[in-house]
Image 1 (cartoon, helix red, strand yellow):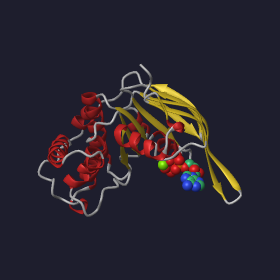
Image 2: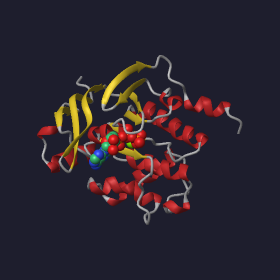
Image 3: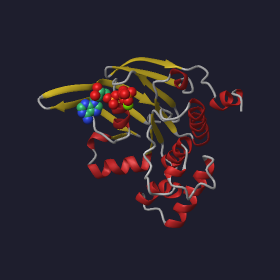
Image 4: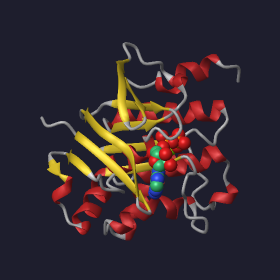
Amino acid sequence: MTPLVELAGIKKDYYLGAQTVPVLRGIDLTVRRGEMLAVMGASGSGKSTLLNIIGCLDLPTGGSYRLDGKDIGALSRTELAEQRNRKIGFVFQQFNLLARATAQKNVELPLLYAGVPAAERKERAASLLARVGLSGFEHHVPTQLSGGQQQRVAIARALVNRPALLLADEPTGQLDSRTGLEVIALFQELHRETGVTVVMVTHDPSLAAFCERIIRLRDGVVTGEERVEKPKVAREELNRLSP
Ligand SMILES: Nc1ncnc2c1ncn2[C@@H]1O[C@H](COP(=O)(O)OP(=O)(O)OP(=O)(O)O)[C@@H](O)[C@H]1O
Ligand SMILES: [Mg+2]
């Protein structure tokens, strides 16, 4: 089977006036289906830029990207948006929920874009909210939820369309360490239950150790790669912490 993500020689330049700023300088990366991968690197090393390219939110300025066997560079804008909506779920550091919409409506949104009928939208969103432990919070708006709860809404929204690929950019960056660990536990469990491929950006080595493989970026190139023999289990770590 083809890998889910195949990047070859990916480059990204930004243009600031007459100046070219190379941010990604030739990234080769393959992510196999069902893998859970951590991307690490210092601030400014290009992690978010890389994740946005993998997520089809941004296009590279060089190299080739095959997502699920499809050459992303050959797609029109509409086709690109369609690939993104069908195959990818995003979780961001800042949660990025719609402020005036309830948890339920936030989770339904990708289904609305996908043209899923209202009754099915409602049912699928409610069942994912239950799965992330938010039954009873369906009608709360983001300001009525804690940070950890908001991130769980965002995770439900990312998964409601049953994407093949879940991308997370510093998903625990706004959370205290215990709440962050709970978010990672949820990722690990959803990964195991659904087989979704996960790519998570973090600069916290203790969080990367929950993934099966770690790649390191520096100045827009991959400088290292490591397979984690026995990834830590977040639920076990949580159980070890005092209640
Ligand atoms: N739109 C842009 N225009 C110009 N330069 C940009 C743009 N977006 C990012 N950059 C530059 O690209 C580099 C990499 O940025 P990126 O956001 O990918 O880093 P990062 O590894 O995610 O950092 P952090 O850990 O702080 O989130 C930075 O030097 C940044 O200034
Ligand atoms: Mg970043």
